[in-house]
Image (cartoon, rainbow, N blue to C red; front, side, top):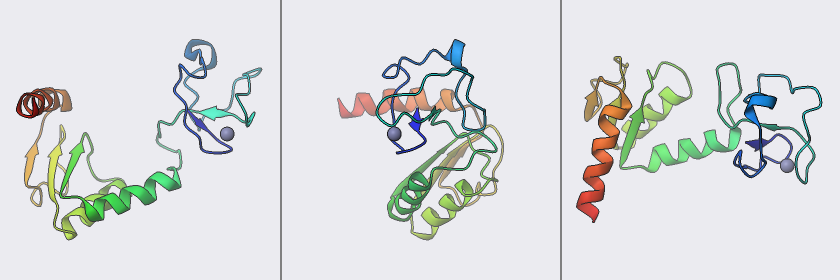
Amino acid sequence: MRCLACDRLYTSQEVRRDTNRWRPGYRSQNSVVRQPAYLTCGDRLASSVVNFGDSLPEKEVELSGQHARRCDLMLVLGSSLVVEPAASLVRLALKSGARVVLINQGKTPYDKAATLQAWTGISEVISSAVEWVQRELG
Ligand SMILES: [Zn+2]
């Protein structure tokens, strides 16, 4: 959850959010009547999940561009890469010499530029990859 006044992040458990009563709290939803104000700011907390129609948080967008320019390897999980600004991040990483791994159930405009791509569900690849890394790193 993100405070709409100060941008501070909280887990749902920290703020004891009852999703059944107060709905998911997406920014594009109006707050529920009598929904309690939270913590120090007293402003509304909204889900930190970005849905279609929500604006992206500026700080994270800026940081993602910085990381894309400096990364050695970019993992793109479950994105068709046709929506901006996410698609531009791949272009930035490639331009900076990073390798790009795409895992998506459908093709993307960057498939030919990727070092590796898998047209499958994320869970089919990531759980095996995590197990392999854990085994290799001990
Ligand atoms: Zn706040």
